Amino acid sequence: MSLTIHGIPASRAVRALWAAVELDLDFTHVPTPYLDGSTRTPEFLELNPNGHIPVLIDRRPEGEVVVWESMACALYLARVHGRPDGRSIAPASAREEAEALRWSFWVVNEVERDALTVLAHLHAMPEERRKPELALASERRLAVPLRVLEAHLKRQQAAGQAWLAAGRFTIADLCVASVLNWVRVSRPLLGAHPVMHEWLRRCMERPAYLRLREAG
Ligand SMILES: N[C@@H](CCC(=O)N[C@@H](CS)C(=O)NCC(=O)O)C(=O)O
Image 1 (tube, rainbow, N blue to C red):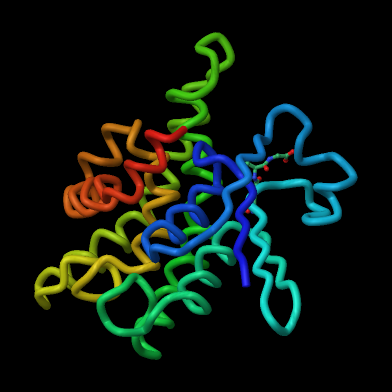
Image 2 (image 1 turned 120 degrees about the vertical axis):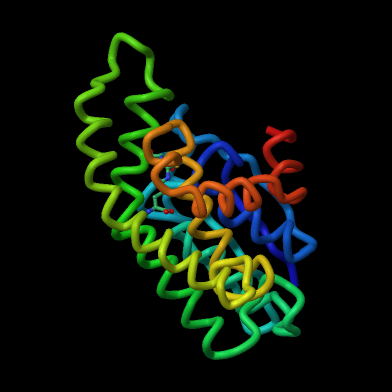
């Protein structure tokens, strides 16, 4: 049995890598970049015909399992390689599994595109190519889903649970935080959602995440 993850931490591959590190898994990391054509070679396209990182390969007694789509990789690792003991990031009950699934699908569908626009046009792109009006329009749209998250986290806290799905950091927090991290460049969004802001800070200060980012 062996696990391999293709992709660099400064990309969506961080979701799979972060999950593997949180779960303390033994895995091979192939730091395939994405801006130099590495994801479009015939060999890579065999692994993921979409030409994107991350890709995860799980060599199991019953055969090779290939997973692409970053959220699927992270959820797969927690589900298949995590211990559902109520202490690890793996879902420990049907309710926690449902939370992980619904919040991961939610963040991809309701948040990811606008979050990336905010990151790109407020921070990541060269200044001369940024369009502040695009960032502003995305910030306005994001106010709707972020209100949902803020209200959920408030209810969790009132019930004595500091995290998204449980009283501990789980794969649900990892998946959602990996996207919301992109809006940390937006003061208005952080200021309008203080509970989310504080939760996000705690997620991004996880030693597993910091170790990955330090490594590149
Ligand atoms: N929905 C996919 C998107 C993956 C994706 O777009 N990855 C980027 C890096 S963040 C990539 O590999 N881009 C290379 C390319 O499209 O050529 C996922 O979440 O895995």
